[in-house]
Length: 75
Image 1: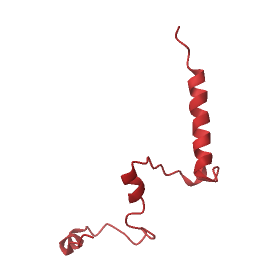
Image 2: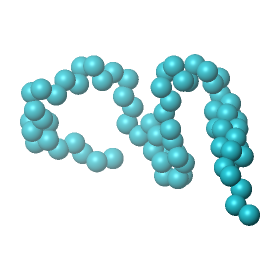
Image 3: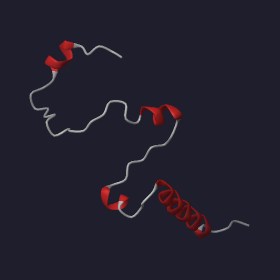
């Protein structure tokens, strides 16, 4: 793990307010990032409609299939 540079802390501007940034976890998505996963965070109102990641994938596949069917066929 890298050591935190003490000089960096003093370089932070006074207008940066980190008190509202609660619950941050270092490396939370690091494993997925290194695995090459395309991670997408849904807005809360959208996430309420999908109980699982499988439900999101199923809905997106349906939209992609519908969009593909709507394209005119070139013959």
